[in-house]
Image 1: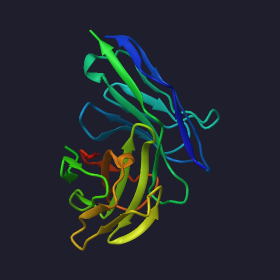
Image 2 (image 1 turned 90 degrees about the vertical axis):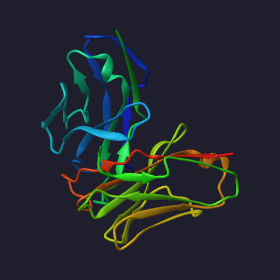
Image 3 (image 1 turned 30 degrees about the horizontal axis):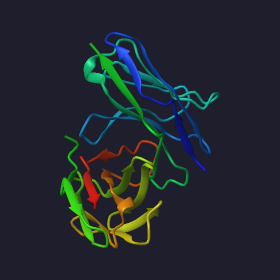
Image 4 (image 1 turned 45 degrees about the vertical axis):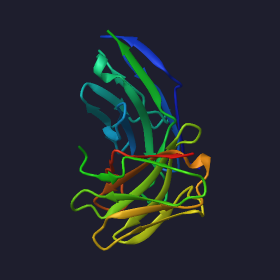
Length: 113
Length: 115
């Protein structure tokens, strides 16, 4: 079945460091891909998305490119801030057009000043 | 603020009890989804309703049930509660059902603690 695998955390970085969080997927066809962010004590917010191969999603300095050949959707940011500390989830729409989101296990990012 | 509201924010109850979680979708959204977030299982899809009809079921236990009412709010009923049901329950909503461009907006969640 469809699945998402993220790199294990926690990831600890200093402010202004470069961020990469790896995400790979297994799915039938070409699913839409998403990154969600969960700040402490809050619900999930959509960070960015890509709906077809080679699409690049971007928002708030974060970027991710839909790579069909490597079935990956890695999240990157050139310079992280303390306020980026959160849990990041990679997700895809499951097959069958059910609207079901399948999430990776989440990666905790801690940015230190 | 996503526009999706969930009540209550926190719920503490005992094993064997029954609780109801409520979700109001964003204005205009016809689809409601329920997800469970726990430490051991991560974020798991439970069930999806579209305009009052059940559209898809995920890893939802038989002790759990849901419905979507004519005003489009949804309720998730959890009965015969067990310690392992302690989790954060999220509701999400979207305009339509499925589709590559269908963005889901999440509520703040209800934290259920079963003692």
